[in-house]
Image (cartoon, rainbow, N blue to C red; front, side):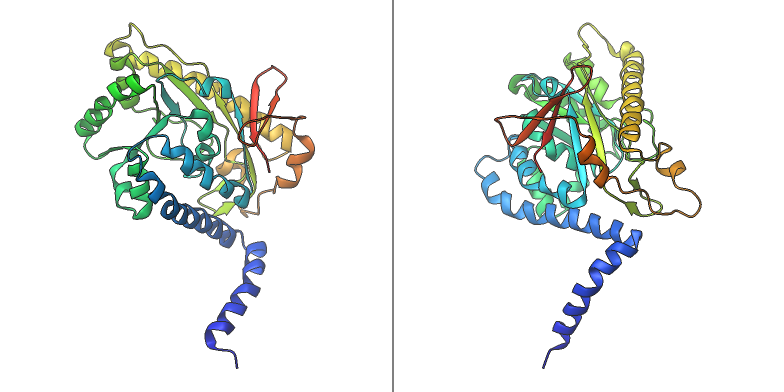
Length: 325
């Protein structure tokens, strides 16, 4: 005779696909649960290997490799442009727009391209169990966001390491992640570090998640994101007085790229172009699933010999990298 546990397990197996297909809120929560659970489990697996080279930023390549399949499970496709720029073996301050924790999945997808790159993270991340330990072993730079003076000191202390080892530092200058179909004003921290250390700023722009993600309505459908790496902006000769103009210059070029790539995704896959908040009407009906629209319209690709990556070029000759399915 079946036990209560077996009965509940069978019911769960039966109800799971039904709830997934019929409830967008369930699907949203389930996908994020899978995302965080798999990252946590993967952290446990890679920690022993990372202990042989603690606080080495190259450990993040291992982390990216084991976490990369999560994107396919969630139905997310990342299209990297400017991989030749992102792969340069030099110290850069990378500034990127921040829409969701899903941004990290995009980074996992192309961390092998960045090679030596670390991230500014809030110190609370240290206390997230195995993930916090794995993050520390990967050489992340933790800051106290509640104490601006300490945060700036922590960022400035790492500049010698960045220049000496030619490491890129990834920063989300908007601070808080907000999926509102726009790039919000920047905080000054990353720009102070870049100017004081005379390190170039490398803008990286994610196209809008508005066509497949809405946190308020609890919607997460399949999606396609273009991630564009722009040419670095020099800081040599600049002083602290030049930081406001530098911030405006970087933000403006990122906004221009954000609008262009977002429009391209909308046109290519025939999705709603109004963003997450405006694209959903009062009924908050399910956003159009674009997964079936992606494959027929991708440009012809050429197999590359490295790391299971496909290469292609856009109409303007810009290099694209995609991970094999």
